[in-house]
Structures are given as C-alpha cells and as structure tokens.
Image (cartoon, helix red, strand yellow):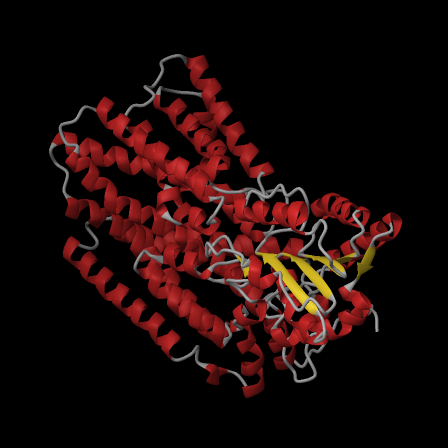
Amino acid sequence: MAVLPVVAYHAGFSQIPGGFVGVDVFFVISGFLISGIVQDEIEAGRFSLISFYERRVRRILPALFVMMAAATAAAIWLLLPAELVAYGQSLAAATLSASNVWFWLKTDYFDEIARQAPLLHTWSLAVEEQFYLVLPGLLLLARGTSRRVLCWIIGALALASLAWSAFSLTWQPEAAYYLLPSRAWELALGALLAFGFPPASPNRWLREAAGFGGLAAIAYAVLTLTVKTPFPGLAALAPCLGTAAVLWAGQGGDSWVRRVMSFRPLVWVGLISYSLYLWHWPVIVFQNAGLLLGDDISPKLEKMILVTVSLALAWASWWFVERPFRQRGVFGRRTVFIMAGVGAASLVLVGLGLAWAQGLPGRLPAHAAWTGSWIGYDQRAAYREGTCFVTARARQSFDYDGCLSGDPGRPTYLLIGDSHAAALWSGLAKALPDANVLQATNGGCRPVFPSASSDKGCAVMMNRLFGRWIPGRRLDGVWLAGRWGEADLKSLFETAEDLKAQGVNVTVIGPLIRYDKVLPRLLVLSELDNDPGLPARHRLTEILALDARMKTMAARRGIEYLSLNDLICDAKACVTRTKDGVPLQFDGGHLTGEGSALVGALAAPKLVGP
C-alpha cells in the first residue's frame, strides 16, 4: 500500500497522479510499528537505547549503503559534472540522515533538476530517522505515565504538527514537504494507534467498514491528488487517516481487508518494499540521464522494464543484504556498528570528494563538459531574484518601489508572471534600452485576477497588482507570461479581457517550448552521439498544442498574443543554443540569461512594434 503507488507514480503511470502519498502511508505504518515496540519494551522494563538503534542500523543502513554505493558508481559514469557535484553533496547528507534538509535548501521552482537527483527519495528516510532520534527519549521521559495520558501528549504534538504543516504551506511549501515538524504528525498518528487510541473494537461490521473506508480514502488520494495539490497539510489527512483506519480494523480481529492484505503476492511486495523503495528511483533517474534503453523505446515498454528491473534489484537486495544483517547470528552488534561507521565515513568522504573535485569534468570532452556546466547556471542575477522575482521558499518580499518605478519620460511596460516570466525580463530589458520594462514576478504564481493560489504571497501580490496598482496607472503595455497549463486558460483570458476593458494594452505571452529532459544534458548527449536531432525528439509536443490553442482563444476574444515558439521553432526543431553556443535553457524550460537575450531580441519588436 505504501510502496506500489510511489513506484507507479515515479515510473510515470498517469493513472496514479497521487502516488506520492505512499510515503505518507509509510509514515503512519512506521509510527504504528516502531512506537508500539518501543513502548511495550519500556513498560516491560527491557528497553535499551543501544538495542533500539542496533535494530535501526540493521534494518536501514546495509541496504541503503549498498544502494548508494551502486548509485555512486552509476553517477560517476552518467552524470554531468554539475550534477555530480550536487550528487556528492546529497550523498553525504543522505548518509548522515539529513538529505531532507539538503533538498529543502536546494529545491526551488527550478525543480526539473531536483527531480533528476538520484538520492532525492532518501528525504523520507531522513524524516523517519530524525523522528526516531526524538521519540525514544520522549517515551522514556514519560515512563510510568498511563497510556491514556501518553495519548493526550502525543495527540497534542500531532495536532500542533498538523497545524504547522497546513500553515507553512502558505509561505514555505518546500519546508512543509521536506522537514520533520510538518511531517511528525503522520508518524505520531501511527503511534496513537499503537498506544490504544482509539481502542480496538470487537464489532466485526465496524471493523469491516473502517477497513474498506480506509482503503477507499487511500485510493481517493492516490487517484485524485496531483503535484498541483498543496501538500502535505490537510490534503494528507485522506491517505493518513485511511491508513490509520486499515490498521485500526486489523487490531480488533479478522476482516476482509486483512485477508486481502494477506494475499501472498502483496505480502511478497511488502517483504521487499524497503529495498524496492531504495532502488526504483535511481533506476528511473539513471535511465533518464543516459537513455540506457535507447532513445526510441516506447514509453509504455520503458515503464514496464524500469519496474521489472526495480523489482529484481529489490529482491536481490532483500535476499542478499537485508536478510543476513537482520539475523543477529550472522553479524554481532559490535561488527554491525563498526561496519556502519566505516561505511558511513566512506560514503561521506566520497560524496565530499566528488563535490571538491568539481564533478570530475575530465570524464568528458572539453566542449561537452562546458555545455553540461550550464545545468549549474545561477539564474539569480538575471532573474533579479529576491527583489523583482520572489519565491515563497525563500520568504522573500517583493520590492514594489524598486521594481515598479522608472523614468516617467520613457515608455513603460509591465511584465507580470512566474519564474518563466522572470526568465524573459533581462532579454526584454536589453532589447528595449529606451523603455522602462517593469518586472513583477513570483515563483509558481500565474498572473491572473482574482488569484486562487494556495500560496498566500502569490495571491496577495497578484490581487494587489491587478486590483489596485494597475487601474489608473499610465502603462504602454502589460505583458502576462508564465508556465501555462490548460487549467490556467479560462482565468488568464478573463484577466486579459478585464485589463482590455480598462483600456490597458495587454498581451498574453504564450508558453516557451519545454523538454522532457534537462536541455544541456540533451545537447551533451547529442554531441557525444553525433546526433543533432536528439533534442527535437524530446520536445514536449503538448506545449506546441497548448500554444496553438491559446493563439486561437486569443484571436477569438480579440486579445493580443505572442507565440514565443513561433519565434524560435519550426516544424522540425527549435533553437537550442545562442550564436555563442550557450544553451537556450538551463533546465527543461527556464531561459539562461544569454537565452533570454536571444528570445528578447526576437520578441520585443512583436510586443512594442519596430
């Protein structure tokens, strides 16, 4: 129930858009099992911290370290230098159970790169281990307290964590996703069940209803939630309460759900579930990085092969690594701790060494290494991050005075939108040196009014701009740009029509072509394989279809529309480099500063006239 949705989601099965909630299912199960074991041992007077952490080491580290060692070898073979630097840093963090903090610090709205990090999935292991650094001490402090009082304590902490999770989504969504304070309630929910709240019921029909209801809640989350759902927060209640209901139903006795979950193939998946979780994500990432199955394999066949390979590696990991280390007769406590210490020190040193060596650029021809270095492009200056481009993650405040003012004697244009709009600003400003090109951009924030964004900063900013700042202001043009999707179109064109009715000269700027892989990587692979057509085969054709639909909608409504793709693409391919060879985009879609200059030079005459 936990691992299969995650694997299906990561493998790209569109029927499982909310498969990421499998992690939340796992947190509840983990809290139920581990907390119950610890409390039982404390009450029996036989709990030992060193025995507890020995069990954690045996359970977690051997399979994790073997996976990371294999992933490191694959990373050195397949990753570009900038990617290998980031990998080395994440390797050290994952070894120290701090990868959730590392990915929180490194992940932002340019997350196409983060999603290609081979160790991204270890963030959940870090959350779990951090929880179990705290829980035993808390339970020891409460030793002698009745389970009823203990449930009140754990329940209060869980409610506080849930409230924090919901609140932090509005101002720092990455922190809410990755960090323990906003996830602790999920593990604590499992602990409450283990401590007897609510008490198990002897009523068979009540248990049946809870079991089926719990499965339905998990299925609802798996099938209906998407990456656009603000998460975790209150949206995580469905999979977590559903898991709790299934566990509670099983506590009271037999049920149909319990029998279904005892089906042997499901039990087998459960046995290998930890190793399956460890291996599936690196398998997917390295296939994407190296196109190991070929460039022309059908997506459906690719998914099936990746899942099959992951299952095979998981079984091997369970049989040859997990089982021996979990049997105390094979390795003694002293040996286990020594091996864990040596393994951890080795992985940390290797990770830091890869970062120190700048990702070993000598592995590639010089020009390919230079092209690949644009993956590590620092967009902050070109996008004016922190002043005119702000993100919820960094808790930045938009500089209204500095970004929305200019020489009153010049033509004035306002560019509004998200990070894709911010990517255009430097190029448009360079192409229009005699105009004021004002910039109001917010990461992940579509320029529509009224804003329905769950990001409070985005909603406040857009509602203030459209509701109070633009009306009555002398502007020669307002340009709306963003990473558009089908769901944005209705509100976008309603916003444009409203501006036009106010007498504003408004232009909707269409979506820029994107790729299913990071563009510099595609360019490197095309260089190494002498295959110049490779990037074109990885264009997201749905972007071209969306562009055509937006063009039609704009014409029907009498709204000015600029297709960026018409400027840089033809039927066969799009411009991928500037005349100096710089990649147009540094990830799958965001422009480099040089790419922005090229696009801006082509777009400016269309926006303001020759």
